[in-house]
Image (cartoon, rainbow, N blue to C red; front, side, top):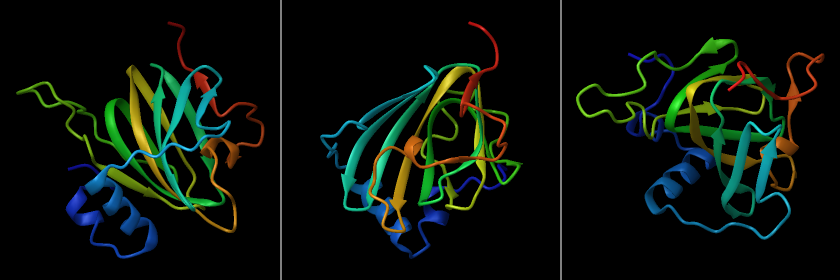
Length: 174
């Protein structure tokens, strides 16, 4: 059993704005990228983000992360989100607790074991991730709050460790 991962049926029982948007987006999978300067973002060459959909204060971003990257703990003070696992080796953390299990694939057919599973990350939840040798990808399904206009999540964050100068770093040289 994986601690704090949600499958669709359990998490989608919630009835708030973000959960309702997640349900809508997973069912319909609309693509509606905005035409602005943050539609594609790069973070220290380790993370690429693409905005797939935006409507008012709701947005979906696809993130692809290079192998052996550490995403240091941080918050997005104006964003509630669901982080949806797609592929690779991603050890998510939320409020200093590891979220993912150790086995990322199914032995019998070599597919991603947690594809489509997700975690809720509220604006005050410190979170980060360690990305393994395969790299990884995930969706961030977002509700932008407090009158903040949506852009890329890399434009709305704070570090847990104020001495950090970058949000991501390579763990090993490739």
